[in-house]
Length: 554
Image 1: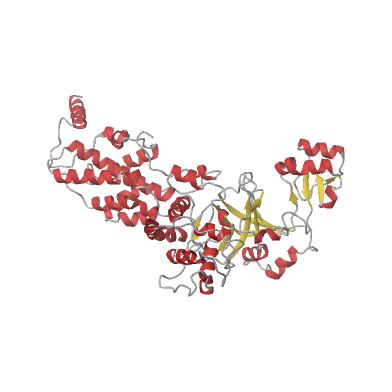
Image 2: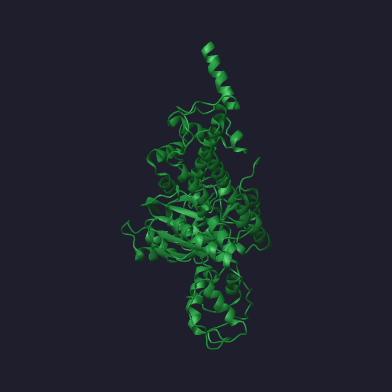
C-alpha cells in the first residue's frame, strides 16, 4: 500500500511539473492527459477521439511516441508535422489540427532537448498524437456529419481502428502511405485533389472584370465591343491555350473560339451550343475562389461515401442533373444520361446510397399520399372526369393486384381518410413512363422513365417530387440486365412498348449500388476534366460554414 501511495504521489508530481523524470528511460505518460485530452488540446475532444488516443498509447512501448527519452525527435515526427500542414491539399484546414502551433512547439522542445521539462514534452506528445489521429479520421469519414447536408442517415461505412493504423504506420515509417490508404478511393476524389493547388494559385492571380450579358446571345462571327473580354477570360481559365491568337477584329467572336466555348459549356452543365448567352456569361463570371470552395466541399462529400471497387455502380449527381453508370467504379463510365431531380425548396432529392434490386416494366404509379393530398384531391373534387382522362383509378391498396373501387362520394371520402389509394394505369401518360428502377428505401425514392421528354432539354432540371427521371431508361435497363439472358436491347424495347403486358417485374441477379449525391464539383473518371454545377439546393454555404476551423471551446 505504501509503495502504491508513493507511485501515485510521484505521478501527481510529474503531472504538476514538480518532479522531472530522469532522461535515461522513456517518460511515463501522465494519465490525466490521456483520460482528459482536452486539457492539453484546449478544446473539446470527441469520445471516439479520446478512446483512439488511449488505445494508440496502449499499443506502443511505454512512454512517448514522437520523442525519445532525451526529448529528441523519433522517426516519424517530421513526417507527422508535414502531413498536418498539408491538410489543405484535401480541402481541410490545418488549424483544425493545430498544425502551425504544433510545429512551433515541437521546434522549441527540440531546441531545449535534453533539458526540456518532461511534463511539457509529454503534453506535446499527446497533442501531436491527437492531431494526427483526428486527421486520419477526418480524411476517411469526413469532418462534418453528412446528415447536415441532406443525408437522411449516415452511409454504412466500416470504421477502421485509427489507433492501430497510426501505430503500424509509425512502426513501419509509412505515415504518408497510411493517409493515402485512408483517403476515399473514388477516382473523382483524386482528380479534384490534384486540381485544388493549381486552382488556388490561379484564383490568387485572378483580376476579373465582369462580362456583360449578351442578348439574345453572341454567336460565332458576330461582333460586340466586349467580345475580346470573353477571349481573355477563356484564355485565363485555360479553355484556350495561352498562345492562342486573338481575332484580327477585336470586337468579333472569332469562330476559332467556338470549340473552347463548347468545352466550357459542357464542363459547367450548359447546353454546349457555342452561343455565349446569359447562362454561359453567368458561369464565366463565377470567381475562381468560389470554384475552389466547390472543390473543397466536394472532397468532403466524397469522404462520406463508401467505395466498393469491382462492383457495378450508378451515380446520380443531383446538381449536375446527370447519371453515370459504371461496370467498375475505378474505370470510366459505360453510360451517361441526363436526369430530372427533385424540385429545389419543396421536393429536394435526398442524398443516399442504396441497392437497386429490381425493375418494373409498364408500371402502375401509386400516387404518394402527399401528392394525393396537395394536388390530386383538389382536381378530383373540382372535376369528376379527371380520373378517366388521366387513366387513373381508385384502389383499396398499393398492390398492382388490388381491386378497383368505383369512384363516387364514398371513394372520395376514402381517399381523404387515407383508407383508399389512387393509382395511374400503365400507358403513354403514366407519370413513371415505361419502366421504373427500384431501390427500396424509407424515402420511397427511385429512378424511372417519364412521358415529359421535353424537360430534358432544359439546362436546369429540378422538376420532380424527389424521384429521379432518366432520359435514357431503355439503355439503363439494357445495361442492368446485360448478364441476364434472354434480356437484351430488343426485349427491353418490347417490354416498354404501349402494347406490352400491363406490368412485368424483373429482379436483378446481383443488386447494383446507386449513389444519389450532391457534388457541385465532380470528375466522372480519373483524368477527366473537372465539371462544375450551380448550387441548386443552396447547400454549399451551410457546409462551408460547418467546415470552418474548430474554435477553442466549441
